[in-house]
Image (cartoon, rainbow, N blue to C red; front, side, top):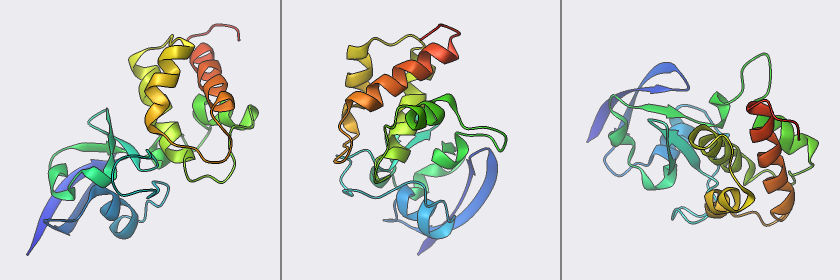
Length: 159
């Protein structure tokens, strides 16, 4: 039996039907065509499917879609504006901290959540916060530098 769910995704109201065992990741990709959120492991270990659920960082593969009723989700598609990339996205480009792209959406969402929670993170805090995002291509140093540079830019500091 399917359940009707009303939610907000990337600032827009949405309604969808879902099975009791369907994940938020499946709904985002298969029903709402928001394919930026990636499936890497399906067990919450890689961070590729990270989204903000009521401004809290979660792995969408571990959340049942039915839990979205009345709640708000932000995916990587909701981070930038039509006019400009989010500073985290821009700094990842500038620091050449991207390669295959599987981890990138989760890293962007996690980095945004970090900077929202702590506008001036240390390198250790940044590494800890992003530890749930596995990258098999670039390594982590460029990603960490990009996120710290974005944080500095967002708080008006010089990098």
